Length: 422
Image 1: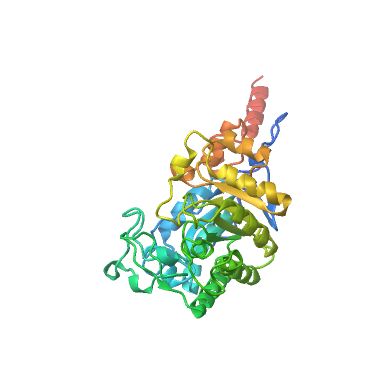
Image 2 (image 1 turned 90 degrees about the vertical axis):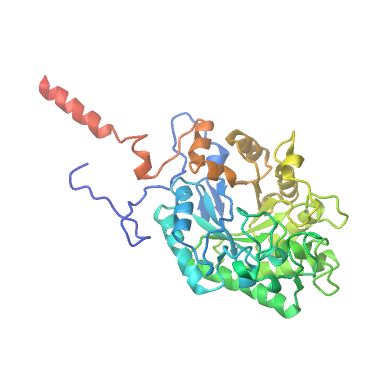
C-alpha cells in the first residue's frame, strides 16, 4: 500500500463510482465454515448469481403517464442493489399501452421507456449486480387505480385510465357487480399484436436497457393467466377450450420472447400454480406441472411459483398458510419433484427466515427464493439473513469498511511505532 494507490471507477456509469472487487452479497469464506446453500452461487445459462436470494418484482405505481422510469425508481432499486441480492427484478412493466395495470405503471412499449430504465441497469452493473425485468399485460385487470389508493377499482379517463380499451380472452368481468369494467374480447389479430409486443419489449429490455434476465408474468390474474384458466377463458377458437388451446397464447409469448433475446439471457416464467378457489373451472397444480414440463422445452429456465389472482372468490394466501409453512413451498416442491434438474424452480411468498429457506433448499423444494415485502421492510435483508446463518458476506466498499475496516496497515504502523520507541 502506498500514497499512489488509485481508486478505480466502474466503467458501467459515466460518473465516478468505485469499482467493486466482488459483488456485494457474495459469501465471505472464513476458516472452518461451511457455505450455506442460500449463499452458494447459482448458474442460469451464462448468468452466475452470487446467492439464491432474489428481489421479487413489486409494483410501485410511480411512473408518469408516459410510462417512463424516474429518479424514484433508481433510488428504490438502488437500495437493494447496493446490498447484494443474487438478482433484482424490476417491477411489472407493460409491453402494450392498454396493458398497463394502472396509469402510473412502468412501460417498455417504446424505446424512450427502455432508455429511461437504462440508468437503473447501469447502476446495477456499476455495483457488479444483476438485474432483470418482469414483462406483463394486465388484460381485464388493466386501467385500474394504483393499489396504494384502491385494491380493486377501475381508473376512469379523467384520471388517465382507458376503460373502453381493456381487453381479455373473453368479455368476462373479474367480479360481478364489482369495480372493474367488462373487457373487450381479443381478436386474433390483437392476440398476434400482443405476442409481438412481448417480443419487442424483451428485445428492448436487453438491447437498449441492458437487463440481464427476463421474466414473463403469467400469474395473478393478468392476461396470460386469463388465457390458461377456464375461469376467464370461454373462447371457442384455437385459444380456448382444451388445455392445449388455453396455453397456446402463453407458448406463443414464450417462443417470441425466447427468439428475440440472446441465448445467454435467462428466461423466468411466473405462474399461479393454483387459483386458491374451489371453482370447478379453476386451474390446478397438475395442470401447472404439465405446463412446466412443456415450457421447459420452449426455453424457459426458471418456473417462478406463485398463486391466485384470477378469481374473485379466492381464499386469501394468509388463510391458506395458517398453521403451515408458506403455502407456495409445497406447490414449488411438487413441480421440482416432477421436473428435477430439467428446470430451476423459484418460490415466492412469506419466505421470511433464512433458516426456513436454507432447510427447504436442502430438501430440494426449490432452487431460488424470491422475497418482496421482506426487502421493503429491510433493504439489507441479504445481510440480515447472513447474520441469521452466522456467516459473513461481502459488502460494497463504501458500506463495508465501517464494519470490517482494513486494519492490517494500521497494525503494521503500530508495530513500527512501538519498535521505534524502544
